[in-house]
Length: 118
Image (tube, rainbow, N blue to C red; front, side, top):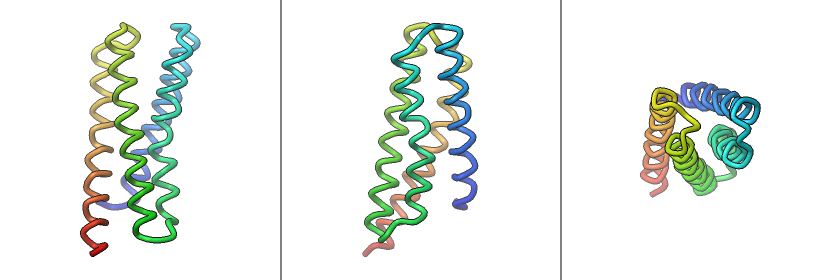
């Protein structure tokens, strides 16, 4: 998949997460999980940006793998927010759909990079 597509999708997802975190704090008065989802959710795109200028293929793989871990952590926080009634089912499903798409791209990118490493 084109690198620019992931850049665009991860940036858009980060904006959604920022708005979600702001809404959680301002409307729901939830401070802990909102900060956690903000950190992990925006880290996905930031780590991808770091990986663009990786010093080596192993460095690229490492940064993309950390982005994948952050995406998985974000999935955890979003699930927890839904199950504790901070998120509606429809908002949860929408965020999860976007996140699953990012995860698929990350997994594919990491696999391709590892294959080309040998």
